[in-house]
Amino acid sequence: MLNIFKKSSKNEQEIEEVTEKKNDSEGGLFNRLKNGLSKTKDGFINKVTSLFSTHGKIDDELFEELEEILIQADVGINTAMELIEGLEERVEEDELKEPEELTEVFKEELSALLKEEDGQLDLKAGQNIIIVVGVNGAGKTTTIAKIARRFKEDGKKVLMAAADTFRAAAIDQLKVWGDRLGINVIAQSEGSDAAAVAFDAVQAARARDIDLLIVDTAGRLHTQKNLMEELKKVKRVIEREAGDFNIQVLLVLDATTGQNAMSQAKLFNEAVHVDGIALTKLDGTAKGGIVIGIKNELGIPIKLIGVGEAAEDLQDFNAKKFIEALFI
Ligand SMILES: Nc1nc2c(ncn2[C@@H]2O[C@H](COP(=O)(O)OP(=O)(O)OP(=O)(O)O)[C@@H](O)[C@H]2O)c(=O)[nH]1
Image 1 (spheres, helix red, strand yellow):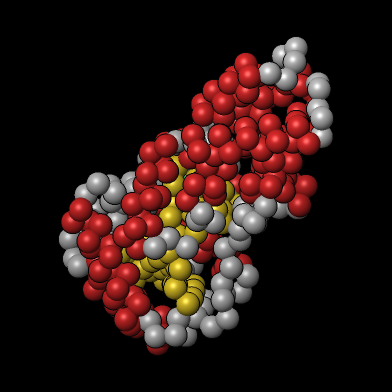
Image 2 (spheres, protein in one colour):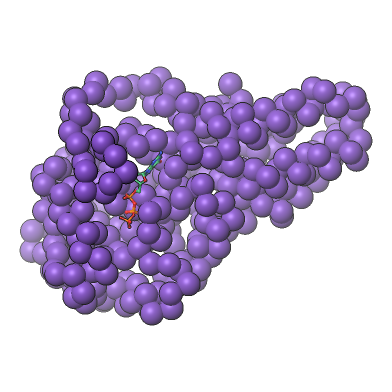
């Protein structure tokens, strides 16, 4: 099976075709998830379990140390407090005496926090549009390509739109992916009106009876007000033109940016209302606690997680498997 997602270097233009046996069986995917989360397991979960197994008794000091580990893992302060309160309640209710007993309880409390977070990037019946937003370098383009490939393989008619008109490289990069995947790309030249590209793309999607239109948008810094305004305009035009298309906004966040990713999520959500998050590069961080923080503090579902560069490494987020991969 051809894996077209491996790059020979970090250079965006260098996309190399590598023949690699694709292992997408359930077990294979779980192993990839487990490997991708190994830094978080070492730097977060193992620290917690080792605290529970080495600390002599359940006391305030233990909970203080736990709080520190949780915050370092980017769980977020409010979520850390909530988890600790949950544990303290369970200690009382279940009359726990040994810190080691806390490991199972901690796992249960994490699962409870993530319970409803069994995300999946689904298309609704009829025609669909996914507007993909996020700052530069978060992994937006590769995420778009992986999503496009997935739905194309599912037999859907897919179209992509290069509404990131801010940089010529972004347009070219999407076109390269389009060629590789055999998917048409609606584009104009650099500096053209992003909303005009979006308008054209919706018209084309309608005319060609497309199942899924994926719209790339400029990798704006959330602090750049003009670009945020442009993004709002792109969304408005799509909503106006798209009639009965199902529209969702997917925010791509780089997990390695920690609390910065949290503030990006808040700002993008305020600007364009985010329906789901693709959290990339979890393999590059020990701070995978951000998954729990995002769910608990923002309430935006995580639909996809990235645990590596290959196509199979962009996985539907499944809370149960996520927890299993961390504790196994
Ligand atoms: N390790 C790892 N790398 C990833 C993941 N997702 C994306 N990347 C890499 O991150 C880099 C940036 O990805 P792009 O898709 O080019 O990022 P972008 O957000 O489109 O950035 P611009 O094109 O600059 O807007 C690429 O080298 C990707 O292969 C992931 O889950 N894990």
